[in-house]
Length: 169
Image (cartoon, rainbow, N blue to C red):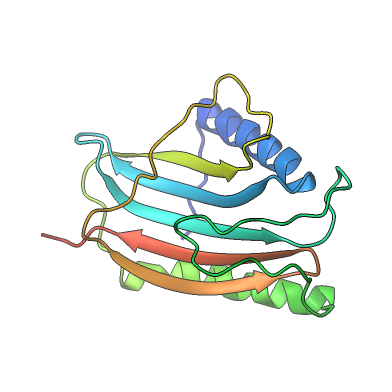
């Protein structure tokens, strides 16, 4: 079941985030996108959706992308793009990720109470960051469960997906 927001403020917020992400992706400046769902009451994260992004080849800046592994990523980023895939193969991989995300409802605990979300972006240190964006901690879930989900790749990108969630007490 897909949720569609009717709130114009939420729509504008997501549009602004997507526009900035598009700029960073085109310039090979992003290595990770994290969506954190937190309890409004306590502020504690209850779900954390992590998308590790590897960008291959040259970005719009003309510089070859050589992402360094950060403390959460222990494997070095490959410098060569994977074999070419057809658009159909790429779409099938993305659809499989969406199906797995949708199916995660079977193992994720129900969210109790009102929740809010934050979007965290791990961008290169030389990235231009809008003034309204602030620094944040990683919003990790203490003693949470982690489930590695499917990944997908194109000739330019590879995206690995991980969901973390708080265990029901």
